[in-house]
Structure formats: C-alpha cells, structure tokens
Image 1 (cartoon, rainbow, N blue to C red):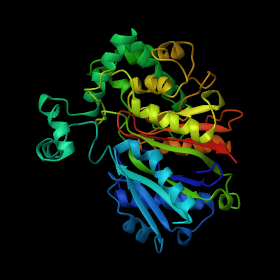
Image 2 (image 1 turned 180 degrees about the horizontal axis):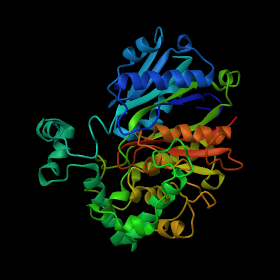
Image 3 (image 1 turned 60 degrees about the vertical axis):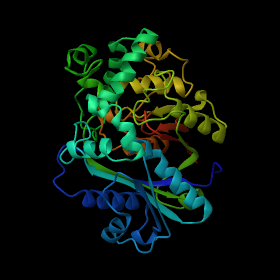
Length: 392
C-alpha cells in the first residue's frame, strides 16, 4: 500500500483491570464506541470490522450492540498476539481496495478473570494434543512432557539465548525495570506509580527458569479498538491521523507456535525478520528513522531478540544495548513509553498500537519529542505482524 492510503483516525479503550465485572461483548462495545467518538464518527459510518480469531465476540454481535449497520468487510487474524498489527493491515487493505470506507479493529477479553492464558487449561490442551490436526500434531511433541504454557515454551528459547550470547538474567531484568519505570508515570497503567528495581526483579520467584515472575507480562481484563480509514478522510476528522506507512505479516521457515524447537538456531525470531524486511522495504525508512518502538513484550527475552531482528543492533548485541539505557525514555531507542504489556496491560498488543498513535499525535502520558515515525510489533514467537505509523 502507498504511504498515504490509510490511517488510524481513532483509538478507544476500557480501563485495564484484573476483574472487569462485565462481559467481553460489553468490553468490546465500549472500546469500539470510544474509538469512534475519538475520531468524531458515528456507528453508522462503519462498514468493516476486524478482530483476532481468538476473540469471543462475533463481528455481527459487536455491530448489533454498537448500532453499526451493514458490513461490507469482516476479517479475523490468527496466531494470538501476532494478530494485533495484522488487524490494522487487513483494515488498511480493505480501505485501500475500496471494500470498506471505515473499519474498526477490536480486541476484548477477560484474560485475568476469565480464561487465563498463563495457566494450563486442561480441556484446550487435551484438544490441541489429541485431535488429528496440524496444530494437534505440533502440540503432541511437547505438551505431554509438561511444556504446556507460553512461559515454558519461551523459557526454552531464553535458556539457549543466554548460553549462546553469554547474556544473564539481569539483561532480561533490565527490560522489566524499564517497562515498569515507564508505566509508573502512565496513569492508565495497572502498575502506575509502582516501579521496580533490578534487585526486585532478581528476587522475584522463578516461573520457569530462566524466567522470573517479573519477566512475564500481566494477565489483564479490558478492550482496545482502532478506527482505520483513508488518510484523506482521516485528515477531515477530529484527531490528527497516524498514517499507516507500512504494514507487514510474517512467518519464518520451520515456524511453530511460540518456540520453534527444531530450527537449527533457537536464538532468533526469523518471523520478525520477515516483518522487519517488509516494513523497511515498504516505507523506505531505516532503523535510524524511528523515534520510538512499541515492541511486543509478553516475555522480556523476546524484546532483546526483536531489537536484533529489526536491525536496531547486531546479533547478540542487545544486552549491551540495554546496559547503556538504550530503551529508556531518554535512550537511543525508547521502547514502550506506556509501559508495555509488562507495565500497562496485556491486551494482546492492541494497547501498544494505541500508544503509537498517541505518540504521533503528541498526547501520550510519557510523550517523546519529535516523534514522526513509530515502529510497532505484534506477538513474538508466533507468526507475527508489524506496523510503521507516521505523522501526516
């Protein structure tokens, strides 16, 4: 798509909590209506909806509950958090091709008070490891041996990264400390006014070695929605638009879910490299043109690898990048000024896209100066997606 073909014109969210006290459908509706109000649009202006395959809220149900009328486009993107930027890509393609004029992307769940992703769930795991499907076959190699949670899957990768690159748990901890520091000055964050020290990170209990509790993102209840329309239309609306300069999806060779155990090298994320190449090629930009990055931080080790895969530093160089404060608000590449999923909330990466829009608008809680280009990534370890958003 061309640089000016589509833009994010509105963002909306519920509060982020551990117990929302209402249905996921209501959360979705609240976020969608909030995003439309932010853009200065009404439900009748919407003719497209995009969400995650994992979202429990049907597009037609969200349309009914919000007063959206006819839909000419609806789509779902697979692979968990890897879908976040992909929903925007699908919406932008629909707008660019004329399939829809205004598309809302949404994600809503009670991920803490409902089904908790961070804990084994017997029935889904029986299904995944027992049915004669491609995913059932994949899961059958490791679920019966106790590798049943995202933390366990990522720990395999993390242990290998430490061994190959001579990194330490403290290098992972520097990510957690930075994210909590950023969240501490963001009133919307769950961990507002609650920073941590590296010593506290190291003292937190093991979840799956080498991952401490504070290496793992939150479990949150909440919803986020984004309004995508043409850049031309967006310029006439209530807010300054964030132009979708580039959007990409990617799956690497020998891809599996979360950790691809049978690749020759377990220390990288080839799928993120695919996304990175697409973003740089589409946009004509380089890592030096990015003022801040919103990196998917469901587990701290994958932040290090994303810095490497996207070209912000070389292979194995991320620990040094972190040691000199490279991802802090005043660093070479401020990462997740809102606190990310470790500090603000875990809404499957959608709250990170909203933060990118705020940085472009100049309205973020931890607003950086001179922001014209923001890179955003979605779930890591899975088939994934990314965006570059720019000032109009």
